[in-house]
Length: 183
Image (cartoon, one colour):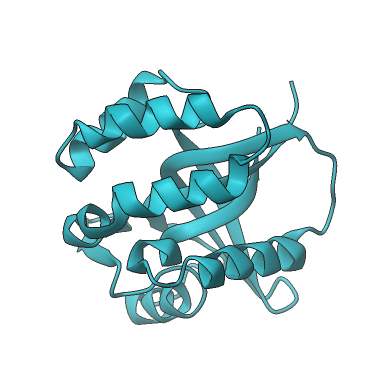
């Protein structure tokens, strides 16, 4: 096994209240931290349960940009790699679907190597480990590359994430993209 460098769209971010370092963090403190570091409120709806806060990608945002942004993303990412036919077939299949739920179902079925629904843990550290938040992120992997060995990668991946978001900024949905290691 190994870990892979991935680019994906975060569709759901769940954080258990008790998973925050300093379990005395209030809901408002957790929400403010999430807003500052993880979620754009224009893109995600918040649902609160007894144990956790769940941020879900807004369907209206996704449905406005999904196909158009993925076409452009895959063209940028895989042009001249010999993999154009793979993503063209994916876009053809997705274009026959009409909603976020249907597009995510294609990812759950794992029919395409560059379009898979996965769930992963994520740790957000604020300051020098003064605040640690553990969350689960569910999303669609759009790209992954070979085995990777790295330590202390967060700042570099934040740069990659911001660069991709900037390149695709005309799509509101691009703000939900993230570069990460999965494995």
